[in-house]
Image 1: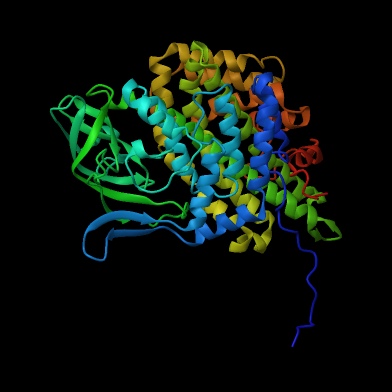
Image 2: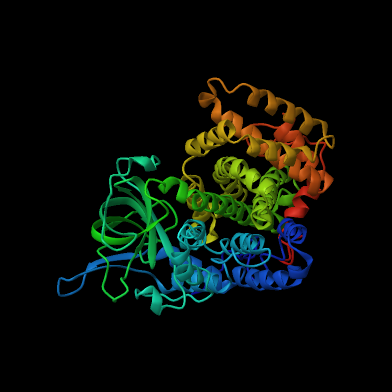
Amino acid sequence: MAATTHTVSNQAPPLLGYDVFGADRVLGEAVERHLPPEVLDGARQELSALGRSAGSAQAASWGARADENPPRLRTHDRYGHRVDEVEYHPARHRLLGHAVGAGLTGAWGRPGGHVRRAAGFLVWIQAEAGHGGPLSTTHAAVPALRAEPEVAAVWEPLLTSRVYDAGLRPAGEKAGALLGWGTTEKQGGSDLGASTTRAEPLSGAGEYLLTGHKWFCSAPMSDGFLVLAQAPGGLTCFLLPRVLPDGGRNPFLLQRLKDTLGSRSEASAEVEFAGTWARRIGEEGQGLRTVAGTMAATRLDCVTGSAALMRQAVARAVHHTAHRSAFGGPLADKPLMRNVLADLALESEAATVLAMRLAAAYDDGGEGESAFLRLAVPAAAYWVTKRCAPVVGEALECLGGNGYVEESGMPRLLREAPLPSIRAGSANVQALDVLEVLRSEPLALDAFLREIGRARGADHRLDAAIRDMLTELADLAGVEARARRVVERMALVLQGSLLVRWAPPEVADAFCAARLGGDGGAVFGTLPHTLDLAAVVDRARPEGTGAA
């Protein structure tokens, strides 16, 4: 018997069937701003195709199924032989295959490659964030591998390939490969120098056998891993393949998979090395220096990934409130809700603009831009990743009880939100890395100051914030206890300078008032009521979705 007690009404339609890239004005402007004219049209076409896929019902289904069916560990086969394999749901393979096919592991060898990849990463991760881990570690491994040109010649084409070639086989037999990371140990955590894994040299040049453990090993079904171990000359970087050239399995003992808060579609494992063959990357004792570029590239992905989560959360909040009526009209038009949405939109836009500016600096590759990145990347990683969880949490609340229900997709975004900060190396480590650069690399500070100086005189609140920041930087005595305060100010000033130069006046005005001028509260929705908040919200509306 059919229920007749009510009809379903006043519900927002699903945010599906749209172009995630084309619906994002901020990202589209950044791509146009930073890409060379000769590649812009082709990049737009690629990104729109990826955006349509990311906004499709099919991608949404893949994301939900991958999250609902986490990986399973198989340590042994039916006969008792160790196999040490992880089984993934087919939806995860489809997500990863689509991403690899879109070039999201290849940025280092094409014009505008980092901007194009960062924009694509920001778009596609909105469909499901968990599989972004192996995309990031594969992309970021290239700088480290280039310390050994003959190794890079073999592996780099595989890592940047657009072919997703799943299954464990020798790298030489594959059309594409993925690389994971295994650096963290139980006793060390973020202190990578405390690694106890031992590396014993063999007779072959650059060949070693590793013995030890890794407490967190990402994407354990990858074709290879960058790991750190103690060689006779000190902490050293190694490339560890899962399968040896002769087809034999390298000893890679998976002890268990982590039961994590988010990223449930991807596996993170505890792994033991027992006479495991590895190839040295870089010189003995230079492990941290060898992986520095790789760590920086990973941090930029954490900024970009946070921007993606924020954008998707804000888009859903704006879409929902535009279609939901309450107290006599659309919820999005209510003054207090509009204030909340505008405040969230400011944070999302500032994160996107900053992520894309950093990607453009990678493409430039000049000495000044490289110096700028050494300071700006850890500062951005500290701040943007810390803002992600509050933004997503507030956006979820805009949907009310509907947002707290798994089917809305918002809980999955909220579970993902803390991870970029942890993956980037923890907020304290990022803040301390900024201090180390300030102390040891004056050229980096010069480049940072030149960047923010391009906006000087455009807004009095930004000018005052720059002066306050310089006062903080002039006194580095006892600075460790106030490192978070210093880095927060640096990141906010950098975001403000970019928005003043490139964002519409209503966005720059609101950001400078609330984030730099002190005219905002500790929670979202406390912007000055005199600002043009309707224009800020309209800019964040996902275009082409029917939202009013």
